[in-house]
Image (cartoon, rainbow, N blue to C red; front, side, top):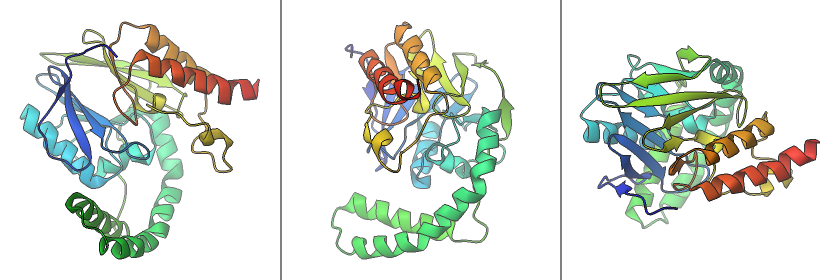
Length: 283
């Protein structure tokens, strides 16, 4: 990667490191890789845009706190890049007055899978509570103890009869621009690629793109070859083509859905991965 002027900020969170990529453009890069996810927020002058939330609701609390601390604004919009819960579990942390934007495919897939998702979380909550309570007694690292106590609170909340996930509520079917008085961001509708209705956030002038799960810092053949694949993209050809398209653009900073900040080399590796393990296998 080029020697870019990316500034790591002094912000305390056990869940992510915070970077200012350019004026008003911030990335929350998770402290762990899979299954934790990245997010970002953009100060456009008169709008504060949040891009994705995180799987852990306490990580999302930190994301909101960071966005307010560094921009002195309340969130204007929240954008969900796709329907996977590690990118929208934290939606419920935002007040109803904050509109949540997604593609129509993200909303419909979210609704289709909602009952199954809630059943799955409630099904594992009791087992996870037992495991965490046993392990926390052996833990000595303060941040890990804090994380585990937060996990206990989360699983107890999931078991409450009133627990629910917040769906997107402002639906788009095409690319659009959010233009503020100081900056603008293109929310680019990719369509079916990694998921049925992917969105990415692109700052053309600043040469920065937030790619959601169209991009991973690391790929692993076991995602495909294991008996329980992690995720099969609905359109691997479009996913690969999108990676190549954005690799060829004049972009310096790529924010993946998971992992550290990426270079064009990582996009090439991702494209080759999908070509080898998904596209060739179906032809």
